[in-house]
Amino acid sequence: MVQRYEPRTHRWIDLDASTGGGSWPDRGVYTFPVTAADASPRHPRTVALRLQDLDRPGTVTVAA
Image (tube, rainbow, N blue to C red):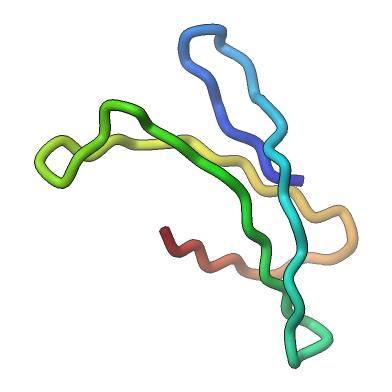
């Protein structure tokens, strides 16, 4: 499950995450849309994300 925090409503919103294929059985690739309308290279924005995996503990790497 991937969620984004919406500061205006103070709620976590579920993102439509899709699973990509991988060559290792213990790794997965997830893609999901995240937008920040007023973001730019000169004015970056922080987007709070929450990732939850109920199956097993592990590490996460995030790339934009």
